[in-house]
Image (cartoon, rainbow, N blue to C red):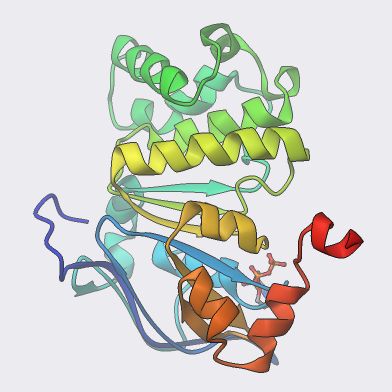
Length: 256
Ligand SMILES: Nc1ncnc2c1ncn2[C@@H]1O[C@H](COP(=O)(O)OP(=O)(O)OP(=O)(O)O)[C@@H](O)[C@H]1O
């Protein structure tokens, strides 16, 4: 995630990463590189290890075996606070504090870092424009915002410190289909506009393909296939890939 990017630099890398929770294998010998400035979608069925993988990139989980690297260096616990300032992390339903206004939520980290209120407000207003949030919504509490607006605020919070990377865990999972569709368009534009390293987790293969050329499909903690949508459809690495793709056929296909 350094400013000095080149084609071969990897913002993140997992080298033979495994992780168990008791008897549950969450990640099993995962090898992946996420080049700087690339957009990758992580998909897979529930419990396949997607969130665990994302949480490892930001130091919220640690591998039992293997290594996680950021900017070409093995991640160490003492770097984690600094790393989190350079990574925007957005989760499903936003995770906003209910007792703070949208602006209060956005201000938390910058305030802690010593930004003055004027700078915080300016940055929040700039991001409200980017995320298509009405400026007046900045003064409202999360309960006074729609689900889509809350998710916009969560995205803005992830972008407040102008991070090099954005990790999004089912960012649109809790939204109704129309709002989800609108936000898919906007998120894609934002990814293209900002040129950051993005890893986005979703259950939905169409959404994955909309966001990213590269789709990583996981199952039982392992990467089953790493490629584009055509690879998954036409060159499946495993019968599971075909089952996963076919399970998500469109309404038109279902009613045909
Ligand atoms: N803190 C934890 N304690 C115990 N088990 C956990 C913990 N976190 C994850 N797991 C287990 O590890 C496995 C992988 O979980 P993970 O949340 O990474 O999957 P996921 O692919 O993101 O699933 P979903 O799409 O449902 O969010 C699951 O079996 C889950 O129950």
